[in-house]
Length: 222
Ligand SMILES: [Zn+2]
Image (cartoon, rainbow, N blue to C red):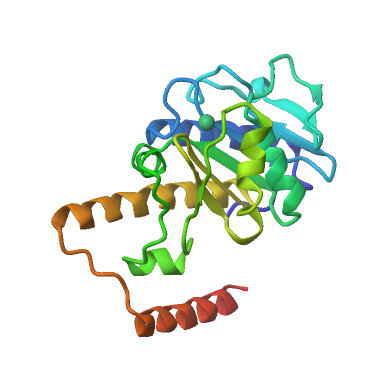
């Protein structure tokens, strides 16, 4: 397991941003130059991916350093235009050290159809993300994006963004990446289950048993 970000050498965090950028790119979650990633360097600074670059081709030297108000402190490239989304998460969640934003195709299709991922169809959904809400429409690159996410940030770790994509966050870049991967996986299962025409949602008893199993799992893991 990759450790939390704060306190780790900057060079390692830069390498990790490259690694997960490539991984997300290969999964088809960041086509073109879309998507962006960030990690906390310390209490005041973030290391963020630049704007206008393929995340497959990005190198460690391309990253940009900003403060928590979004002012660029270092880096020869310009920071992502979607920075306000990342800032909103870090400002509201002291426990979060990494944020991933991408456009995974099936999850984004749900976001374009005005549908949250809030139907508990498979056990994995309950055991991992719970419900993934849908934030209302906001123009990319504006402060509207942060405003649309704020109501959900405290109680969720993955959010769909209407007609846009998804954002996921956690204590490490690996954790945020795995959540993003799970969002797309759950969207895919939901799509196919409904295409099959007989999707069976979990009942209350099954949900209670799963919540108990989840609590036990969390206790054993800590
Ligand atoms: Zn985007």
